[in-house]
Length: 413
Image: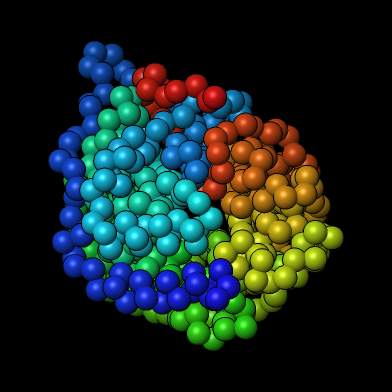
């Protein structure tokens, strides 16, 4: 039996069990605690704009200065790793090993967001199947919550900082956590293998994108499950609408008016423009293959992704596209969807995520296999900085950190 067949068989056995895990598994696993209050006496220093980079294999989060591009240091977000592994029962430990193998190794940070006051970091911890909160200044874990199923995926934080929405990927649901306590306060059903979560511009909706079972080969795409965008009310968690796709929905950006989505799809070397009001694809943009990308078989794409990383600039007239298998970043102008230019990287760099910085003029792209972040100028489609980070950087998010909390960071090794 091939490695793919063995892995697929193992997941097929584990998935029904993951769906049946009791709700109690989503209860906080550590006593909740409040983050320290801001220092008394005098006005606090202004918050500092940062880009957070989740170093997935390291189990750390790097804090990069959004203005100077300097690496300010890292926070260890898996200090309890041995404790968590030791506390797993036989089934969960076996499932952990399968998920670890399918994910390509240790993946302890899937997503990370900063609280509005810049003092607490909320993390979706990938293969550990949980979410946790940390006081940035001390590194102390404030709470930890097991999610349903076996793996925690992409997450989104509400604008008021009160709700952390995480995809429980093998349980086919997104779960909402109270950031003060880690308690699960709501959830909604999604497609198969829920992935990205995106709040609408006004905060009233959450869009969840599902990708289907990525361990199955492309030839069995019809068996991967429901590949859809699920739209839920961000207050009641009632599902309001679903959009069905024939391929998994990867990173996406939605225009502030909620009318249009630009989304990467599994196996597509490019992206689609999708009308969310009419529920139909308007245009499909195919971007060029590199020689190395063209030589790959679709089943060799990382987790079915040809391209994985989408962002939109502050003026909403340009897109930043991470060409994962092709080792480039493309800047595309809208509404024409013409390509302005490319930033090319060494073969195998694996550009894997894109986010627009707070100035709206620069796109930050993780180069996962090089342990670096590339900063690209939207106006010129040129790289303006390259920053060293931790092992296998994936997700990036923007945030604002309290300057007094920076003392809790460890200098990047």
